[in-house]
Length: 474
Image (cartoon, rainbow, N blue to C red):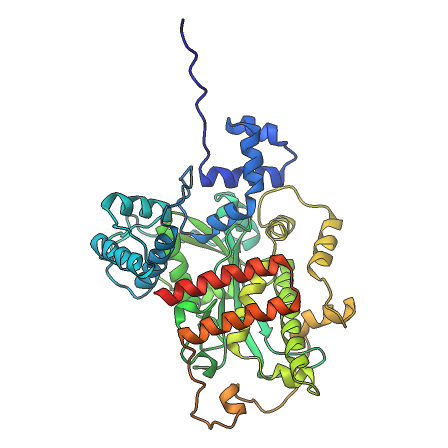
């Protein structure tokens, strides 16, 4: 009697799982229909939907292997994560990282963590595959193909639709320079509180580029002792955006991923970088000043600013409650550029994927079914959840504060705790030690225990505590 063989399981890669999520978001196809298209079972599609946030996070991280079908966790996850953190630090410092060096460092980390572990070549191969790590060439090689010569310049309106059709939606990016009054309070606009923020995302919202913040101070005192790798966003000591440097880095990142992408930009910026050599993987698509469509949809920019303003008001209200009798303007003067970098990064992370997708489609910057007119109003209302103490009109005006005329006045240098205590012009607050960090964790946990907080907040605290303890072991 011939035995029937078991049905072979068809596993989807990370890239295919992202395509499944896009089909379910953009079309009216059911999970069963999507399952038939990808030749998998409906429960597998259901599990993909359940793990949507984790899959998108892996996709946006840039370190996950997008062709990998199964993600098997390492038995020694602590060593795995610590070695990956050390590897990124070493690459940022341009060290020549080799296999023997990684094996030696893994053994050191195992000893620090108190685990009986001897790394092998096989473990290192699996670790590299799990984390999409490759050593690459040690010398810079010439690109395999010379950059394409620029085509004859037709009118931007005729060039844009034709050029966008040559790229998939995941490879269409838009970027825009956004002025931000980073420590302004409602009803007060200062002249010295302005920074420029560069926002960039693709039309599917699956990739948000790291923020670039340009400020007037060459070396803000709040950056003293802060590692550049630990900054949540890049900082440039000039209000003008360094377009050439940023585009070169963007082109190198796309080259490492083997991609050809389109970047929507303002026509004036494209003219500024017209002589920039070596852009082999990024094609610049200018939008003329006569075209009212911005290179990054205005609703996306407005959502970013709304989240930033809400976070700023929350921070100011907490500081004001600690210092009774002070006004919001006085508390706002203590907001530093470093505070602004953290709040801007948090605000950019909160801009929802669905808003980015629908905004690109509505502006005609990506293919897809145009959302209904009422969808835009509902999206804006969802983003503009008004903080307490402000009406919808007042908060909406606060979000658009940059359009108002600034109040003239003398520029004041940012001050820190040491200055407020009278430490002098050249004094700095001592840098925190590992013991200070661990003690601060204990104080924070005790405060949460006494405040009757929610289990969700404790879960976030546990993740933060684990990360800090891991850093203390390095």
